[in-house]
Image (cartoon, rainbow, N blue to C red; front, top):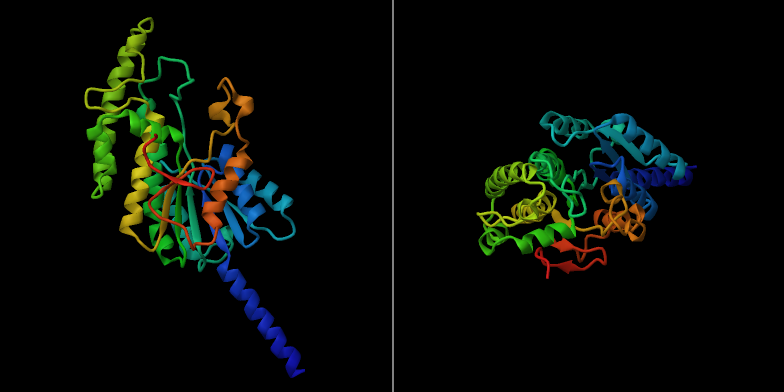
Length: 326
């Protein structure tokens, strides 16, 4: 009997240890597009990970959660939470739930955490018709850049407490191209080894102001192609807000990497994915699926830490490249 009791206790302890080591992957914008692919691929490729599907619309996040838990039955490994990355209080509410070890998030606050900053918008992709709306820059930066910073900053204490905290910034080849097209001075600012978040904010403020002026002029000169965005501004910024937001996002990833060496902080491109953003692209039917893009991002969020580098840009073929396009 003592032998069986000992074995039972040992198995219980092993089970508890496994529960403690289960990684929680938090995905912003997990209700659509590549976000769904990331959530699905986390569960499909790593049986020891759980995923938190977040979205501004809770019903949509819950629908994705329920589908995932049905697909990967019997163990429920998906959770849902309402999150608006443009709202400071919304981000703080998620941090509070993590602090409490809420049952909504699996009831376990002592675990490795990966934050995937995926939420984003696009109003001025190259194949979108011009003129582009003057508010495109402000709206894009608020979600793609400021939203990622807001969520990272709010969850930072939990990431630092984690024994393997990671922050994945879902960027784009458009960010690398935007970095290439801007002036040397602007590019050097974003690549400077002593760059601070306030430096990015200042440059983004200049970008927004110049973009709004140029876009308003374009509205009154629809027949003049020379007045249509994108083009190089007087300060040396390439006026396409989606690409600029992703260029800044990569620079912010390096700031986090340098400031917090215990974390893995990387930017990545999941590839050219067939989503709502790209549905008007001429070769839409040739693009990658959300699961193909999601599998790569899930790999970054869950793979063995050994050999991973921080403060770099990963491409879908798992290679590290410059933050500036060739």
